[in-house]
Length: 548
Image 1 (cartoon, rainbow, N blue to C red):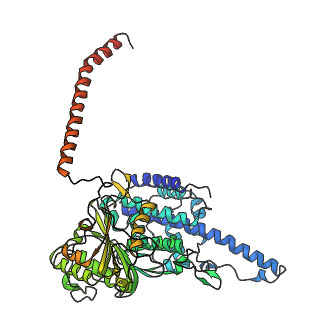
Image 2: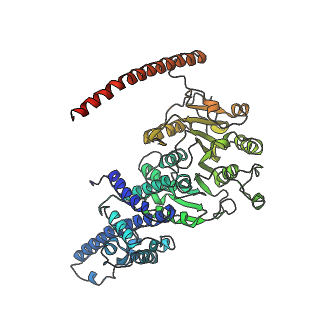
Image 3: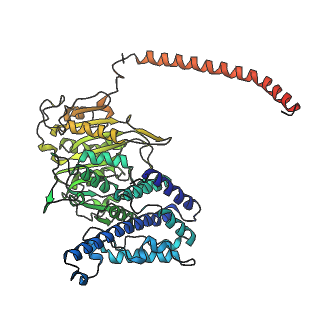
C-alpha cells in the first residue's frame, strides 16, 4: 500500500483547519462533526470490503453446489457484517452516495440522516454518532466530504485509527488548556501501557477522555499476542484469538460529548466498551471497588470545590478524605481501590502530589507502608497540550506484596519488591517536537519501560541503579525522606560521565568568565558594524545617483 499516511494526515488536517478558521462555530462544535465524517468514511470502507468478501464467498458456494439451491439463499443483511465484526452501512449513509447528491440538497440533514441510519443498523452505536451537521453550511459539508474522500478505499485498517488519533491531537493542541480534558498525548499513554502491561483482563479509566488508554492497551496486546513466552497466542477452534477479545473496556466521563468521541474512537479501532457518563467524584457508575485488573487515567489536576459531604461515606476513599481543598488524593484512592488483589494502576499526577503535606502526606504514607506504590517516573515540561509544567507518572501494584525476591538486582539484596519503590527521572529524556511541545520516541519509551522490566526481573537483564536516572529505594529510605515520592530526591544528579569533581563554585566562576568574554566579543563586533554603516550609506547614495 503506497499511501504515505503522514502526508495524508497533514493534507486532511490543513484542509479541515482552513474550513474551521472560516467557520463561525466554536472549536468543540466543529470537532465532533469532523471526527464523525472520518468515522463515516472508515465505516464505509470496511463495509465495502466486507461486501466483496461476502459476495465472493456466496459465489464460491454456488460453484460448489453446481450452481443450484444456493441462489435461493436468504438476502445479505446486517447480520452478515456483524458476524465479521464490521459495521453495516446502509446505501444512503455511504460516502459515495452523499458526495454525489445533487446541488441544492440540504447536506446537513442528509448527513444527519446517514448517521441515524447507521445507528439503526448497529445498535451498539445508538445515540453515539454526531447529528449536528446542520450547524455547518452546505458548502463546508461538501468540502469536508471531498476532503476525507481523499482517503483511499484500499488503505490499511489501522490507518483510520491513526488519522482519527491525529485529528484528536490536533484539536487538543488547537484548544490549548481545554484540549487536555479529552486527549492525552500518545507517547505518555504508550509508556503507561508498557509499564502496567495489560496483557489480558478488565481495564478501567474513570477519566477516560477520548479513550486513548484503551486504544493503546489494544495495540499493546496486538504487539505481544504472538510473542512467546510472555503471552502465547491463544486459539479457539484452531483460529487465533483477536486482541480485542483479550481485554474488556470500562470507562467513565463527565460530559456526553466526550463519551461519544470515545465510543467513536473505540469503534474506529475495532473495539467496543462500556463507557458511561458520570461525575467520578460522586458517581461510581461501574461499582469499581476491587473489580479491575488494570486502571489507567489522566485525571484533572488540583481540582477545588469538591463537595466532601457527598463523599464522606464512599468506600472508594478508604484512606480518608484529605482536608486540603484538592482532588488529587481522591483520584489516587479511586485508582487504587478499583484494583483487584493483583491489579496494577498507572496514571498521570501533578508534581505537587509527590510531596504534599498534612492529611495528603498521611494518605501517601499509608499507601507506601502498605506496599502499594511500585514505580514513580518524573516527566519534564511541555509534554502535554494543557500543562506546561512537569508532571509525574505513578504506578501502583496490589500484587507487589506477594512478589518473589529480585535475585538479579544489585539494589535488592535478595528482597522482594514488597518493601521497595523504583524511582525514574525521565525529565531529560524527550524529543523536541516544536518550540513549545515535546514527546518520547518509541525507542525512548522502550528504554524507560526496560528499566522497569529489569527491576521486576521480567526481561532477563540485571537491574542497576544509574545516578541521575533511576534508583530502587527501600521503604526506610523513603521514610527518611519524609515519604516523598519525588524521584529527584533519590536518583541524584548525573555525574556527566564521571568528570564531576564537586567544585561547583569553581565551575560557575569559569562559566561566568567565558560568558563575559563572549559578551565583550559581541560588543566589539557591534562597534565594527556601526563603524561601517556610514560608508555603506554613502555607497548606496552614490549608486542611486548613477541609477544603479
